[in-house]
Length: 345
Image (cartoon, rainbow, N blue to C red):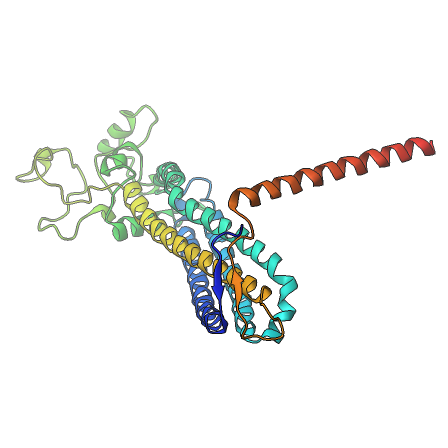
C-alpha cells in the first residue's frame, strides 16, 4: 500500500508544479545565503587565526560554502524539471533522471542536517582552541621585532578594544607574563633589576595591563599600572573600587561572538533543510502523479501520487533484501573467479 496517497487532476498538478517552481527558486536564494554565511564565517576565522591554537579548522565554513553551491545547482535543476512538468511532452525526457535526482536530494538533505549539527557543536572545539591560542598570543605580545609575531600586539590590542575584553580569562592573566619587550626596559634601573631578580624565570612581571584594556567610558583616567598598589593612586582601593578596565576575558567574548554567529547559521541551515525536504516531497508527488495518468495521451485525466510506493517498513525491508542480494552476488562472482583461476593452473 502506497504511503500518503493523493488523487490529482490537471488543475492540482499544475498548481503543485507552479508552487514547487517558486519554492525551488526560493531555495536557490537560500543556497546563496548559506554560501555567503559560510564565506563570511571563514573570513572572520581568518581575521583572528593568529589567536587560535594550531589554526582553527576551516572544515565547517568550507562545508557551508560547498552545500551552498550544491543547493544552488540542485534547486536550479529541480526548478527546470517543475517548469517542464507543466507540459507532459517536455516532462518525458526527465523521467529517467528523476529517481537518481530524488536520491541525490535525499543524500543532500542528510548533508545539510550534518552541517547544521556541526554549526551548533563547533562552540566546544572553539573553546579549547581559543583558550590555548590566546594564552600563546599573550606571550608573543612583546615580540614586535620577531618575524611571524610582529603583528601579534596589534591583533591583540584591536581584539581587546573591539570586543571590550582583557586577557584570556580576565585582566589578571597579564600579571603572569612579561608583555613589555626587553628593548624598552632600562636595566640600569633598580626597580627593573628588582622585578627581574624576584622572578624565578628572570622575567619582568608587573601588576599592569596594556592600554587596550582600558574602558574609555570610565570618568577616571585609566589605571593600567600598579593596579594592586592602593598607595600608588589617590582615593583608590582595587578590592572595592570598580576598575576602569574591561573585566571580561577575551576567550568568553570571542566565544560569545562566534557562538552566536554559529547558532544563527545553524538555524538558517535547518530552515533551508526543511525547505529542501518540502520541495523533494513535492517533486516526488509531481513525478508519481504524472507517471500514473489514467490516459497518458490525455494530460487532463486523473492520476494518483504518493510519497512512497510502499509503507516505510516494507520499503526498508525491500532495501535490506536488495543489499543482501548484492552482497551474495559479489560473493558468487568472487568464488567463480577463484575456481576459474584454479582450473587454469
